[in-house]
Length: 127
Image (cartoon, rainbow, N blue to C red; front, side):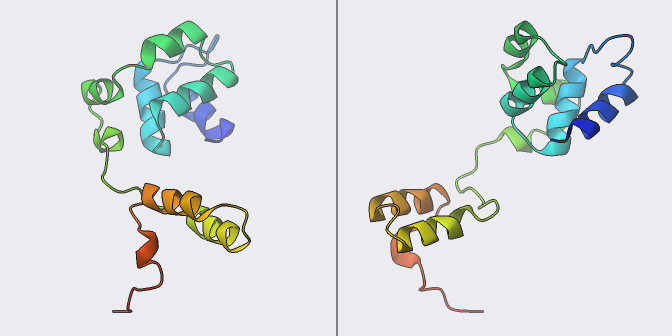
């Protein structure tokens, strides 16, 4: 979540002058743009000095309901049965296991987090 983009969105909404005063609508717009959780975005905004902790606590609840209230889709807030691997997390876990940096149980738990099973690794056939 680059500072620059956050500041541009807030400025376009007229929420930077004379002092930053972000609205919940802008917060929802930003989390939709960055496809991030409400909590992650609120922490980021607080660290940038754009919202106070009291606002953070007030806005943390019911992210799907507030997104719907402002006309945004709610798919971002739904739990899915399997997570997608982001970046190199699963391959790095495999390397750590191969180097005996983590146990087989740790490796299996990481794979399970992404809907994979240790017994399935290497058994897929190409289409």
